[in-house]
Image (cartoon, rainbow, N blue to C red; front, top):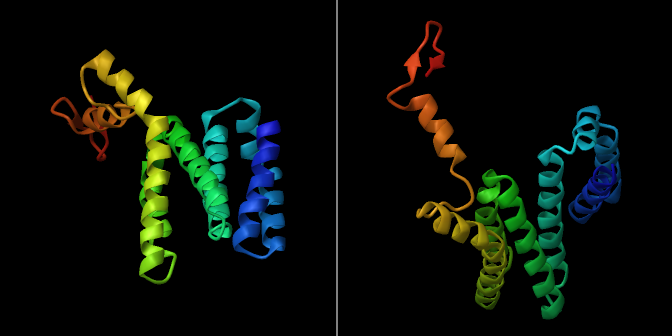
Amino acid sequence: SFIGALNSVLIYEVAGLVFPRVVGFIAGLMVAIYGNLIILESTLEPTVFVLLFNLLAVYFLLRSKGHSNEPNMQHIHVVAAGAFTGISIITKPSFLLFPVVAVVWLLFDRSGKAFFYKGLRISALYLAATALMVLPITLRNYVKLNDVVLVTADAGKVFYHGNGAGATVLEGGGLSD
């Protein structure tokens, strides 16, 4: 329940950084009373944690823009965003798409040549913080499996089971092993 309440507050904050505060309030309220999410929170489903880590990554990225004149605070926020992005990737590997969008946003949401190079440094810091969270899992997978598997191999397994040589097409278009 605490994580669910925290997610509602984070949605309020994230939306408030991008839109008028009333939009953040409505969004946070909607999440707070959404029945399916309340059920997920009460059973400690990973989705609740993924939502928390994703919100924290976006929150700190948005906050880093507000401190572009204060390099120390901007670096702290970018490192925090990278760390939460890495934790989110470990929890749900599909979040691997997010760093691409984040880096593009960090690079090109500025004007002028000097800002591009600053964005390049900030993006490298963000990616380094993300990699520091994911790297221990990748190293563990290499040591145990003698193969470079970033965080999980399940997506490949599921794809193979549905499309491999042993999969057969059923009547009606479905697949079977």
